[in-house]
Length: 285
Length: 158
Ligand SMILES: Cc1cc2nc3c(=O)[nH]c(=O)nc-3n(C[C@H](O)[C@H](O)[C@H](O)COP(=O)(O)OP(=O)(O)OC[C@H]3O[C@@H](n4cnc5c(N)ncnc54)[C@H](O)[C@@H]3O)c2cc1C
Image (cartoon, rainbow over all chains, first blue to last red; front, side, top):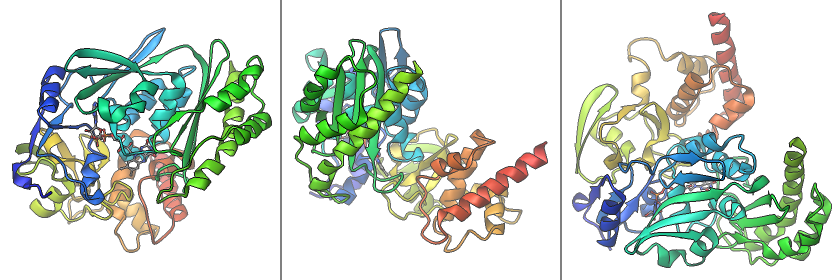
């Protein structure tokens, strides 16, 4: 399809309702633009109508409460990393936000964009939010809706047909968390595999993996295998790596940066590193 | 769509596709060709400019989001006939500029970083440069030159 560039329009509504109405009329949501601006390189077309969230007050805010943190969809990676730095339990999210992409991209790429880019497997925030058991807040034709992030990701394409993601809520029930990523260069490229690990107040461990399969998901097999160790603090790195190898139920995706088998293969090493990092954090407290 | 913004201090009006990348407005409409369009994917950093004081990749900034913004490109870092920006001069003096393709972006990223972090470590400098790729000199020499510049600046201040 060819698009007459001169005819493209961009709306900048000042309310969520205005943005949703434009979305329901077929406009594409434009957040930081770091994914959408590359559509021509992916040989994808962009709709004639776009709607920006930039002028909507509140979507760029982060509210840090004692029992939860609410992050607006327009919050940038840089702002998220800055706001969450040093908050116990949310280290995985802070590290995901500060380590993704490069500094210039982090200054504009938003939380909403990272969660809503359907075809992007290497999103750093996804495993971090999965391990945190984040809640996504959507605005739909029927009103406001809150969903666990895992439920949202399971059916993301359907949710995104007529929905605006307005915020992400992080419960503050974690004692420590960590985020491990394996890029091929030290920085700047998409990670080959990502592992976020969190421990909650009941000492329950949560593992989530990104970039290995097309969509990030929890590593329930490893969580179950480690469940009898719940009381063990810190987590034993070698045992974690061994169990990660025996519970590796991922089907690696082939991609330009790495083959699927390799993404799968590196998970036990990432699990070992994550166990060391988690132990270090738990030792601090 | 019509957008008004300032580019290097001059008022500028753009009419056209709101998804036009800022780099194309700079180069094609304002003839500010110091900003390089290389990868157009946000990976190389050659198109880095400042928007409202923040270093960003101009290949990925749609002009439609820049109503009222203040854009600074490499051309505004010196007067043209006057001396170079001190960081640009330091990099040139250390002979770390070869083909020159990455150089405007490096200067834009690093000058805004050094403005906000006056006493960075070597690791900080490397992290700040993570989005600026150089295919000629290798990074260590550029980092050496930046650290020397920082040291000299601190010496001058104290
Ligand atoms: C050089 C480079 C390196 C990168 N490296 C990494 C990396 O290491 N890790 C990583 O995680 N990411 C990486 N990224 C991806 C980057 O994080 C995403 O491009 C970014 O998060 C998208 O956010 P955005 O605000 O720019 O979204 P946009 O490009 O504006 O939008 C992306 C998609 O999300 C939709 N959307 C946006 N907001 C909403 C909303 N609120 N509700 C519903 N739909 C919405 C849009 O319609 C569009 O389909 C990299 C990007 C670049 C350019």
